[in-house]
Amino acid sequence: MSKWFKDYSDGSDRLYGPESTQKRPGDPGYGITKNGAIAGPGTLAAPIQYMGRRMYVPGYGWGTVQDIGGAIQGNRLDVWFESVDEARRWGRQTLDVIVCNG
Amino acid sequence: MGSSDTRCDCLQWLSHSFLRWLHLILLPFFVTAGSARAQIIPSHGALAYTPSAENPKLIVKSANGSAAYRLMLLPQRDAKGDVIHIDLVMHRPNAASAARNILEPEGRWHGLQDFDFNAIDFLNGPERSTMGSVRTIKIKNRKLSVSFTISKTEIVSLTDKPSNPEDYAFKELAIDVAVDNLK
Image (cartoon, rainbow over all chains, first blue to last red; front, side, top):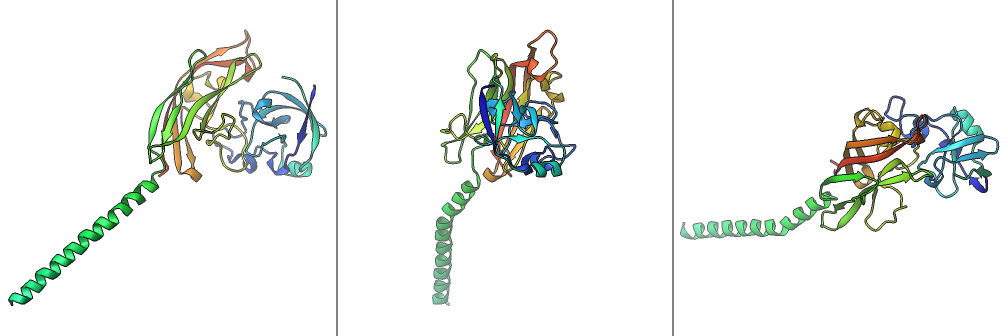
């Protein structure tokens, strides 16, 4: 765990529903991440070079990078939430995130 | 009578001549307008990933014959170097390999896309993969359509008891790609 990572995520991006995937329930690949996992608690989206890495996001907990996204640029990270309300409560935060070495 | 006929002939000749000139003047405009609508010359080819061979590229030419885009399969390796994921990527010819993939949707998006190939997703063959064996991506802002058919996959398990997506890798992936102007 040697590297720190900043989180600039926007709460509105933190979902795997139609709001952030451009897909609807029933569409092929709905709720499935880039690496083929089913999105759920602990699913993170980050730049491709972090794919598969474990990260600790303060206030959220441990997660694994399983996805990328349209808004992932620089040191930006998106985290999964169950509902739009939870995502909006989290909002956009700038945090120091622990990244496990791959 | 005679002079009236001559006047008629003259008018007819002038009218035909004018139409001929008008035709010659307007023809290049219509030809140009037609070619402006065609962004690229429709192209098709085969792309394949194998560990031993150099991965081929498909060059798509613009309507004026210059290279407009290049498509290739980009393997993503795990820490041990095994190819567990492959992306189909489309770039401008001179773009860096890390440039944004033109096949990515515009705006806000997450999740598996048609250009993503996960080894574990092909355990039961291309037809049963999440996005299917025949896929089409429409790039509306560039008025392009990219269609591809997955023609061959070979998957190997990396452990004796595979249980995670990372436990499978590609030995081979072959696709037939066609790029056309969006109708």
